[in-house]
Length: 279
Image (tube, rainbow, N blue to C red; front, top):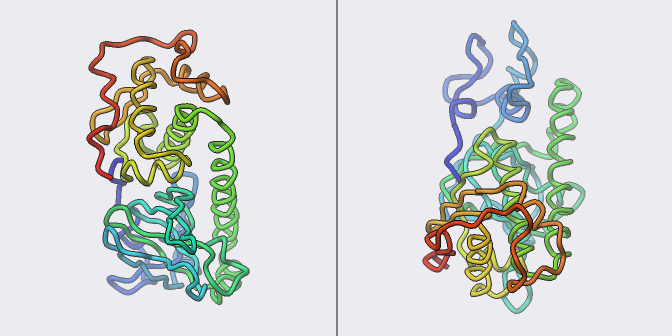
């Protein structure tokens, strides 16, 4: 995925006297969540006077540990996180990828401990809102409550999308659905829905899709040979969005079946797959 813009996240509201220099306010968080749809008031509001923490998380570090006490929600400002759980035998099952404007730890809002973990796939930042602050923030700033509900809806959608991916039998169909989900995430964050850089390695992708990691490379190659995508290491370009959507609607299409009708076939250079993708 491409690196997200950070201007909105890292600067406090201009023209207000609320948050001290270097501090962040609830207004900054609401602006992030609402994006272009949110119009800040002309004068400083309650949101400008409520401080929130912006935490930096280095690539590879855990933001949330499975089983740790649950005391906050995290809103992704910049970067990307993988959400996963670890079985008793140590196997890590990747459940989702979360990017800009998405909420983390919503699955633990009514629990004492986190049922899943989250680690940064790149240097990232998150706004931290304590559970104990949620009622006061929502009462004082209705816009925050609305955006919190929307963020919660996106978190629930992530869960249903994972079910949708796993409903497909063929690995390349699962991959097609996964790429379309990434495309929608990129579009929602104001980035290109057709070209993006994968932050996760093939082992994480394989874990999320429920297939062997060698199958991931073969599935990328199959989609590339059908003229649906172009892959260069971790850079992916969707060449035929309609064709990829048509492909994704099948639950059992095999590698040996012909490409979907209307899909363009390209030169063999597009069939590189992700053989060089780091594990």
